[in-house]
Image (cartoon, rainbow, N blue to C red; front, side, top):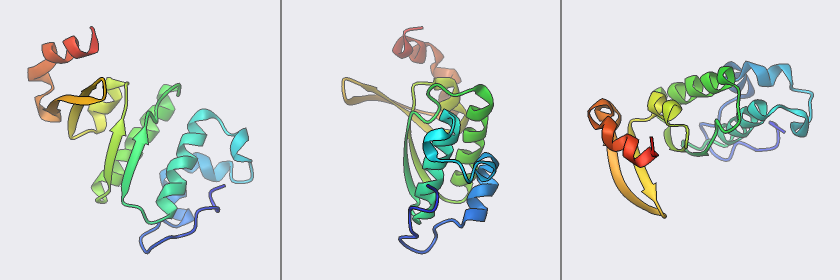
Length: 135
């Protein structure tokens, strides 16, 4: 499944670069995508889009239902991609995870952005955040 997306434009990652980001995928190269764990499927999905040369990623709940060790690996990959200049929009209910990778946080309620908090201002806005999160 990782071979399916072609390089649409220059800048698409090679298989070796993807395997560096996601060593688990290399180990399961001969497995069908449907036989992969939830975490491996997420890694495969991210790897496939990185093959195309896209530098703008929309990740929708990439940690949902995953083991903590896989969540950590996905977080490390997101941080590496940010350092390499990728733009990432992360839609995530796991606030603890989002706080480790985001530059800013947008609070969306009923389809509308109602607030934005810079990551370095999270501690100063903890009461407001708890109100939004229902804590």
